[in-house]
Length: 254
Image (cartoon, rainbow, N blue to C red; front, side):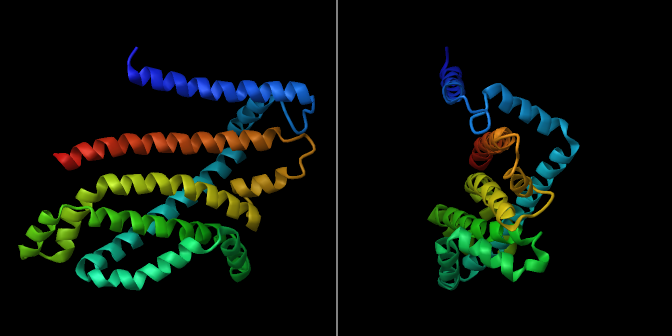
């Protein structure tokens, strides 16, 4: 048995153990409202995926997360380009990045809710952007700083348009780091987006659905079903990005 199979077997065993423990707790508590059985949770998952409106809600939230990540990435690329041309410009951007990193998510979300109350549908995207952006820019600039200094020195000697050098050399060399940053941004962005949707009570989103489930008389089965779906989406996203990252490293080496 090779190491890859062993790795997945241990991973699956861990997940099965979690469900077994939950089932035992549910049986012991005998309270289907708070501790629904595992089968009941999976029935709710099946209902969510068989319901057109639930699929639409899931798609809207995921699309918003992707748009936010791409927006943060493009702006981070622009700032990184400025950093390459004017290295000292980082001292202009650093305070902004540090403020965004230090600001509590809950306070940002509440402020954005009131500041953009008439446009509260876009408030979660703004909050997610403000949380993701510092991570994105630090990832790209960190990647640029890790490029071999001899390559940087050679590039300085070439009489080529700076933007062309950035796109043709810097970005390809940073691909593995960029992919890793995307991986971190997706998981964090999805959780921040959903929580902000919940706090802003945005209809037609996962957060909006969770608000409606708060007073669900049938129990917490649907809520736990959404929790499992979100965890699986983040896990699948992590797996896909890791596979892409692995191939991107091979490409960058070549």
